[in-house]
Image (cartoon, rainbow, N blue to C red):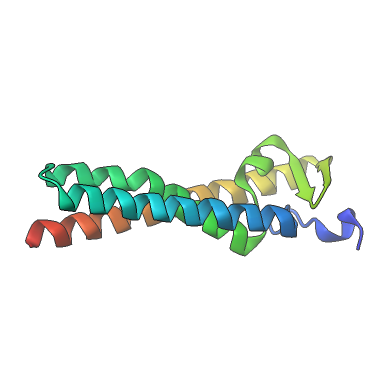
Length: 128
């Protein structure tokens, strides 16, 4: 399958190897969040430090979404696509605009996922 038949503006701009990379990033981010949670809970650190979960959780959620949807927000912002070992530029300005909107949506969803999960964890731990 050629790259031009794989790329769909706002829908798909990465291939299998890029999706696997994002799944690995998501896993690392979620493990880091869990480790951070354990350290804060197991020590005498203030519960307020749990807000620090937001960063790895937001990254984890965004990377997981990118892997699932075969769409990279940073490539969209730079007007590119990447399928396996081939990278290219998106020539059409409407397609680049569509890609930027889709990338922004994934970023907002990742931030929202990180914020909601952080708030839930903080709330639960505060009640204990």
